Image 1 (cartoon, rainbow, N blue to C red):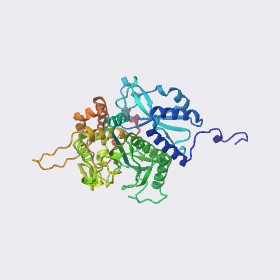
Image 2 (image 1 turned 90 degrees about the vertical axis):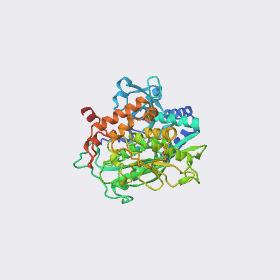
Image 3 (image 1 turned 45 degrees about the horizontal axis):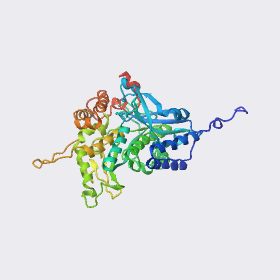
Length: 482
């Protein structure tokens, strides 16, 4: 190096925050989002962005109707000057909008700001969630984050209820970067571990991945609870605390982002396909749902069946009654229907149980604080905002399950493939009313496109097409070439 040339690191002074400080900063932001008004939050973070000279960009993120996570980086100075007029071309994003809807706007949810670990994502950025708006600044009806936020406001105003959610999201780690894009059904995926539940040496690749991802999540204010290898080889699960519905979904999207980036940094792939490997357990996204009123868990009743209140059992009845037509939302891909096999702790029967982990809805052991419903049939590739919008809407507005005393009980099953799920979804007036006719048809259209690209029979081999044309695998060029 020439004598007068300074090292590159001395030329750049971008924001890098130690993990303990990062965690404190993100936890304070999460608390402020509940405590302050939207106007107060905007002033707080506008002032911060102006003062913090080491920030180079603000990453604004949003989720399309199928659940894909999109991010745009805005220069910090431009963002401060133009954040009330941010636009993007929705028609260029598959599954988002038609060409006639191409000019969409992004509103800013100032209370959703998160500071990122610089060793994972690079220095000098913060991420913030956007709200998709039409040209006239009205809410875009296919943005289910915004729809879920509106539903949360409505039930708070009309019933005094807050929906609390904790998610258990499972995934697999595969050898190599972009393992999904290179998948073929002859060779399958190459797993990094042959161990099972809790079986992982402290410094093997799977445990190193889990530790690194957990550290990043903790620093991002996830309020971690536990993390561990799962039942299948190379499978993982990192648990974090419950939150109100919208933040819980934000954390799910950030969780998957963290896992994918950490894995890529380590030369591996984190996959959230529900069943990437036949013959072993698949991955789920169990959603633990409860309602609170005046700070009290309304699902708890010490004298109720399994410790649940009448309100909780009423929600169970409505969810089970609409289970078949909900299936396409909760199990949103061709691959998801491989997972719904009770031999691998995943449900295909529409029932509730306090002990059977093969039930669609399970009642975990709980108390006044933790009593909840665990909806186990949800795949990790589902759009979390849409899934919770549908589940909460069904729990409160669906038709309860009725029993004909003159007939013996029949076992009801979830659809066994995406084609049956599509048929039930399209025929459902309830889902059309819940989602709105335009988003309902848009969602069905994109699910049909994926179904048409794969063999109708699932068989025992995970087909190349169901991976490459999966909505959450970035193979946009292939979709155009099909």
